[in-house]
Length: 224
Ligand SMILES: C[S@@+](CC[C@H](N)C(=O)[O-])C[C@H]1O[C@@H](n2cnc3c(N)ncnc32)[C@H](O)[C@@H]1O
Image (cartoon, rainbow, N blue to C red; front, side, top):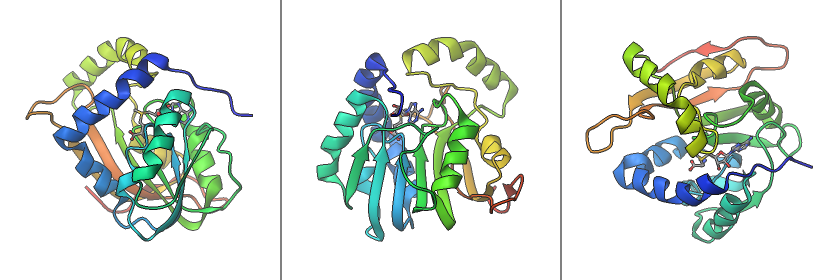
């Protein structure tokens, strides 16, 4: 059985953090993340289920995996407002409780900053996707600007403590490529709140294809 993840403080504050972020534009990021997704979808680290009301009608079913009990309970409540059928299950990114090759798309939003083992999580995404499947990702990432990155590094220990293990300094695009994915499209941007940048502003939204069996390192084929 999957090891439980318990972040009671973060689970209490995240719904408010998310509502604030959505009121300042992240709701558009969620729509951008999910535009054109179809078929059977696995959402990894679904949190409160904030994506559920943005899935397009071409999606047949979403299996939403969430390890934190309080957040999972909120995700279960969010199913009623979902645009497509959603099933919420317990589990971790590193050990997805689903069979091989069973999904057309995997959706990960604001989760690879937090999972303890990113390569293993991405290997699991590869395992559960059908041939021709895709990974949709939306993440805040390490800054490409040296001074901003230094600030992220300084803040990281406190941030991790308050935000359920989240790291400000992960180079998630690179991790996806190192896991063998080919990045089909990526938008790198600063998510500004009231015109100001913060430690978690540098962000990416993108689409990637998993490595075919036996293939090695991926790359970026399009996007800026
Ligand atoms: C910042 S929240 C994002 C939630 C949601 N995806 C969203 O877009 O609002 C981070 C989520 O990652 C989950 N998480 C933490 N460790 C995880 C793991 N090992 N596997 C899967 N999810 C994990 C947390 O429980 C939490 O729901």
